[in-house]
Amino acid sequence: MEEASSSNHVEEEVITNRHKNYTVNRYKPKAEEATTSDDPVPDYMNLLAMIFSMCGLMLKIKWCAWCAVFCSLISFANSRSSEDGRQVLSSFMLSISAVVMTYLQNPAPMTPPW
Image (tube, rainbow, N blue to C red):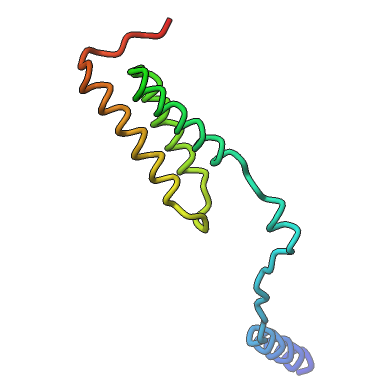
């Protein structure tokens, strides 16, 4: 009989342990971590996209226009959601317009630069 009462006690303890209230603590990043994660890659790619777009538009170089598209896409992919998207959108539209204008002026296929 003692074995039966001890097994009932263990079962009751397991049941009460299942119903404990566990608190969930939300993660709060430290102020130091939030400011040290400044990634310059989107800004550099945005600048390169603007430069390549201008070279593609002004000098009619098709590979510069395509490089501008790729740089603006990389800048968009690496940007944070909290940043303002107008600058990335404007560089993307400028690079697309550079590709369109270079192919409207000379619709021949692009020749390799080497």
